[in-house]
Amino acid sequence: MYDVIIIGSGPAGISASLYTIRANLKVCIISKNESVLEKAEKIENYYGFPKGISGNVLNSRGTEQAKNLGVDIINDEVVNIKYEKNFIVETVNSRYEGKVVIIATGKSRKSPSIKGIKELEGKGISYCAICDAFFYKGKEVGVLGNGNYAIHEAKELLPVAKKVTIYTNGKKPIENRDEELNVDFVEDEIKEIKGTNKVESIEFFSGEKRNIDGIFIAEGIASSGDLAKKMGVMLKGKEIIVNENMMTNIPGIFACGDCTGGLLQISKAVYEGTKAGLSAISYIRNKKG
Image (cartoon, rainbow, N blue to C red; front, top):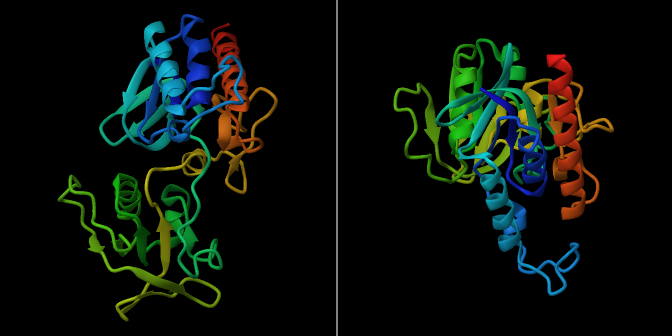
């Protein structure tokens, strides 16, 4: 079991790990998606680099520093967080137990640009199967996505819904999926999601139309907001709400970096990662006391 599980390997997550590992805690970082920092060609506004530095090099140095101090770096995709005496972070390949979770996964992604999604959010469009599955008992629902996260959400819906279909919106479904998963895959590209006061149907560019009661958005990898919702963490829009100690409304869950909003800068992410790490140390020590 870990003392601290950090989700995200950007400047915020790495900074949190540096402080927690040096406090003699057992720490891991779980990350699948590459950090936005890696895509920066040259950074000239960060302290200590008079000639600038590439984002890829800066990110690699941070990761190497964390590894050298003893942080476990796990390359895997997080699909769920839950609580069973301690926090359980579920990934595609395993599950990890920890006393504290720090969410540092960057900015939540935008919703898919499909007509009808924004208008029907909360009226049949949902972003959390664990949160909203109950409302679709005995109904036909869809999951929008083609990866592991979409499959995870489909599995959450199967015991409740009458029928579950995964809509990949023109993309190929992930190859190493569970072949026993009792869902249909539809690869047609979606033109529009229709409904007056609630989701009623999906229309494809092929001209085909399907009646449906609800759609769960699960494209790509689970975002910070997706993971936060599963634990009942409060959000403002898609940003995680934290107090001055970077703690959410759920004791033991902290958040830092771009996912908390504000300036999308390395300096801000490093500061918040530091603060989250120090707060996590105090939280664990106070619980022991």
